[in-house]
Image 1 (cartoon, rainbow, N blue to C red):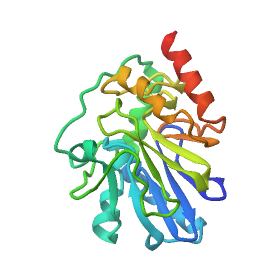
Image 2 (cartoon, rainbow, N blue to C red):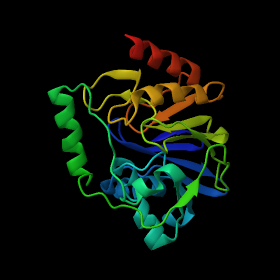
Image 3 (spheres, rainbow, N blue to C red):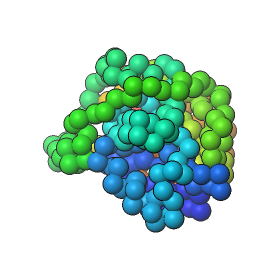
Image 4 (cartoon, one colour):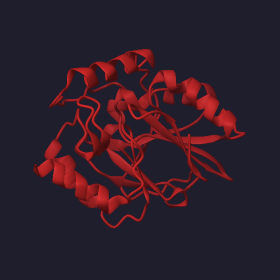
Length: 238
């Protein structure tokens, strides 16, 4: 799905990954689930691109529903995969998440796990090699993605600011569609290790100029960063 001239999404409001398209090549932000491999190939074809145009994959964190096809790109096509140093072991499958599910509604929860099953999300392929990144780093990749640490959902959760796409990719630092309740709009994400830290970490996004706020789960938000943060804090305090 084309969102803007330099910006594409694959997947849907349940699980999404993104592509930044520039003259220098393509940067993939998150890798969804393994079954999104076919969606990636189709989207690249629609862009008149191929896997050979991908210069790197940047993961917002190391959870399985964001690792998807990343190891295939690394192993079979030599594409480097970047993840925050605090989540490197998580992305390699060496440590497990320590989180709670929180509120659930039966229909939404069943829908999430049914979709995950269809897209191969129950058989995660972990990374065997990663390139560790840190807060404040600007990567030498198409779009010059800048790393912003937002720990809480996981120790190494990051947001990725790409000015050429007028976008910030936030992974599970927030969501606009709660996969376990179906509730829509900017709000804290489920499966979070430390909810209080995750909420506090949103301060690191204040002042970022980007129209698009793009979560790993939910509808792309085009109302700007400040309004998204305001909405999340309202939900969290209610």
